[in-house]
Length: 347
Image (cartoon, rainbow, N blue to C red):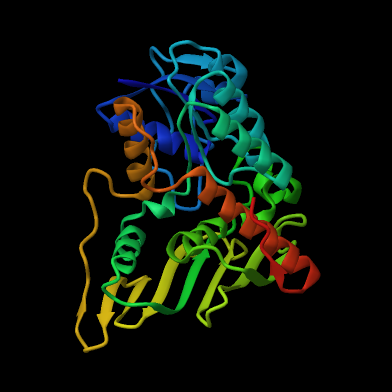
């Protein structure tokens, strides 16, 4: 049984709690949150852009409850520290947990700046423990199928690809309304669009440069709330992504892609996931898993399995790929602000 210490009971923390409760080889043994109501199990104030199926009350019977992450990290019963607090607290918490000899699963985005990025990368490489980041789209069933089909070589080289992620406004959805504070979240660029930036790194490797246009302060105080970006791989392919969280509350959440390859086009939109072949045939692969239906379920189940078996959790990511995606986001932010094409500086 892998024993989980969960730091933060917001939208992602309660989502993780619900997933762990259904895994046969995982048990939440400790939680930490600054909110006394959440430490009592009251999560009625929690909401998110994809909804929350956790209910308004968690049964925390038999679970150690702390008001500080440091106390949870020091708990000898904890095997994995799962970090679901706001981004400004990721680096300090992750590094402390790694240095304490804990395995770490940290929600995205990794951190706020290059100095924190370098410090986390160094801590992960010095640690003998496992580290994964919640880049859940790498494990999301439709994206995973598309990735494996593309990487198999069966549909040839990519010609163009567009990834899109549009959320209704998340204003008021989190502790201290931190999403709307640009210094804390960096807007949708870092907290939302990061997923598609990372997918581009995952599918196609390292771009040489990026050209991005973005709008600051649409809904947040000064974060980048909407962004369009083109990625230059130096080979003539057209790879782009769009992301934002400015639409009014109630607007349907959109996650989509169109990947045009030599022998087929892969498409995910509101009508579902389809593969369209150049000979005119098509298919709608059935990729859903009733037991592990989302990327959140897939990534956490996989991480727990790896900890239980004592193997590296490297199926979906490694620290170098995580660092690459973050370097790409930093280049996008610079491109938005300078209105210039920016070369990506990898760690």
